[in-house]
Image (tube, rainbow over the protein chains, first blue to last red):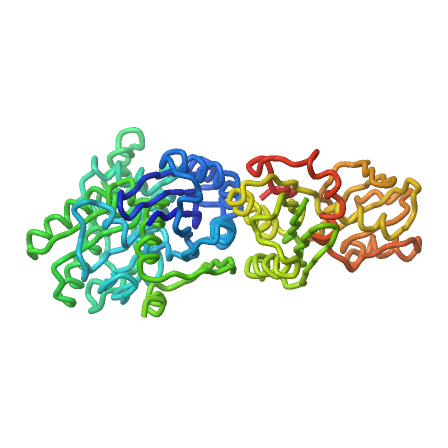
Length: 348
Length: 218
């Protein structure tokens, strides 16, 4: 079964083709990072305008890469949500009408399910059930994954997502865009023990997160340090920023790791999967590997290129769903808000 | 030649099909539902005309200006359809479509100047002036987005578009110059089809070449 996947939910145009016999046979990705850099964040209308220019050329290129024609496809999967409504509608308009005109099933894929299943693209892949930590710029979720489409949210963020906290903190430190990556790079050069930032929600039971207070703590610390009498910007700034970055990252990673530990205990599962943009974070990977040894569990991360948004995970999730259900819809859908838990019903 | 036209750029979602000299059309004013409506509309028209989708030879699409998301739904749908069916497309201006409609309402063979102004929200209109004679439509001014007071209304024979329904400056003009006008109207796929059908072969292009027209910066 060969499925084309279309991802346009945010600032990446991803087009990929997954073959259930041969794996991923095409994987095209265009990132809009440079377009949004001057705004310090994703500008939704600019994102949509770019998606509509890139989608068709990337589909054509993907078919060339896979050496197939559109008529060889068995289904078209597109990200139907959650995400930016205007951006989502580009992928769903193209994807749904492509499927309709080819008389193929169209598969509405949940963006976070795509991320959650991305580690299954690897040869060494996790088996159900598992706990999944989904951490990206828009989400911080702990999910009980019993099987395809059977998801229970164990914990969610009450405010900022983990990736969002990275980006916002980087912005207030004046680190440029996309700040999260820059901040975690600087963190490798800093002293993570210099500042003790709060670990929100750690003293309470439960698996929810809250990261918005962290950036305030960073701001207060930063201002306090640069106002000290003996602070010399040319001498101290670089080290200060690096140390703040490292201490901030440590606070986030520590929180995520401890919550993962709790989730594993709560479910008694032996497998932990980490996905989403923040799963590329090196420190998080190191500390979760330590947790793996400590709890005698197995942990899985997606390949680095599948941590950020991509078409491969959408094609893959679409293919898995197509094996279970076939729906042919002529209604173009986009759901800017859509809970993973609502997916259950579709597979009953 | 069997041609399909679709338009989702305004509050009105419409589709039209031309098969063997017969025009089939469907439209509905249902803002925010265009994505869900457009493919079912096309399905209905194909059923009425008793043809399969594979028999569509070309597609015409309203490329704006209009609602940003609406314009992209139309272009996105046409991208999907044209890729799948391996056919060529023609993108047309939503303002030109209205000018064409106004000219037809005048039932004349003489040259006429038509002003089009549609509501662009945020106190602005999308506007343009056309000179039309028979089937020859020439642009007198570039399409623009501006305050309603900046629309050039001098010497026009007819005007059309929701802008004349919404903005006091334009409504005032309508009162002073009781010319043939149609204000409470949207562009329609059937007009796009009628305007382009005889010229389709000359105008057709690859689907990658068409782009939405926004006029307004993001």
